[in-house]
Length: 344
Image (cartoon, rainbow, N blue to C red; front, side):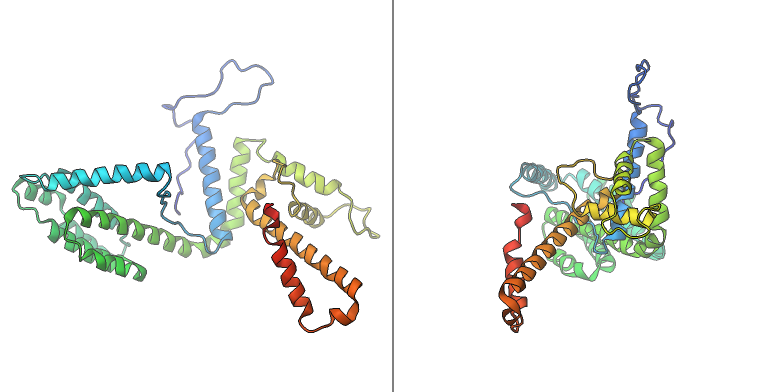
């Protein structure tokens, strides 16, 4: 799985600086070492990623592109332009300097190898033969390096490995004559192909994650709780409030013990009306807060629409309310008036 890293034992990183206070006063909050904090962050990151893959069927990674008008975008553009301009000067010098070009070819080979499946034995062997870095270095030393021949092989390999959606971009590489522009576009398209491979892997793993989601998240939360015993305090308080709140529909059994299902029902209904200023959001549902907030806004909109419809029926009577298409048009008008009201 992407971003999945091996869990490290607690005291294995002896080379990392320790943030623990040896003379910590009695009653002070417990401190944690940098290694344990990193391990905890890793655990939370993996939990969030796995949860999003399971819950969101449309989840996918997208290449990060900073806005062109932002500081990050401008700095990135300047650095990239300087890098490729420097490579252009090296290749056009007399004699040409291929030092950086060889490094880029090695990176291209590594990226292509990362796209190979276990069954691509023949292709892997052919790649090691054509993109033999020792042989390429010898060709550089004797002035016999043919970048266009190597680029042609790389493009053909990309065409055999890419998804159909990338065919036009790979085909466009064949029309590029400038070696610098060609290498730059090869790296760009290879980056897109790696993203496609990651997303394909995620979709392939999703059915298996669905089967193990509950057990996996329970185990991860237990790991977090073992490292930070106070990490579920907000969840505990949230459930305690749900237990203490009296039932809105009292019945003959309302004075008896409250069932776990009833407590969860009350707790989740409270999430739909959660105060945005309240920062003590339950940790166990924090990853779904955006979805629950959106659901809460939809609920408020439906309540307002129903209220308007009931008031209209009470004031106008059945004669107007029963007109064909009246209810639908009124509901559309109310929905349009309420659109964006939660942002104001």
